[in-house]
Length: 80
Picture (cartoon, rainbow, N blue to C red):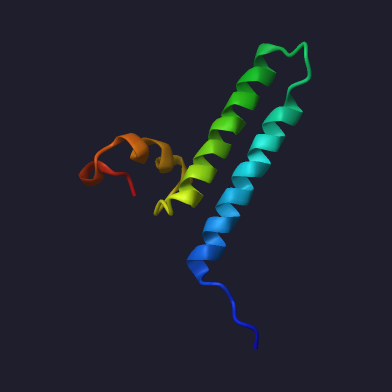
């Protein structure tokens, strides 16, 4: 049987790939001239993508949306 990577590595890689997919989706949504709804949607997708990438790189436990606040909060106040 082939050696599999550790589960944490697999999950982190999937988070990073999901984040990159969100970035690509954010840029595909915008076609200039864009209306406000497209810009808000693209910004939300880009923010989600950033959160996925940061969560994957830093191995943030829990939800991906807590990765960005955890960057600026001190350790005892982190969200999980």
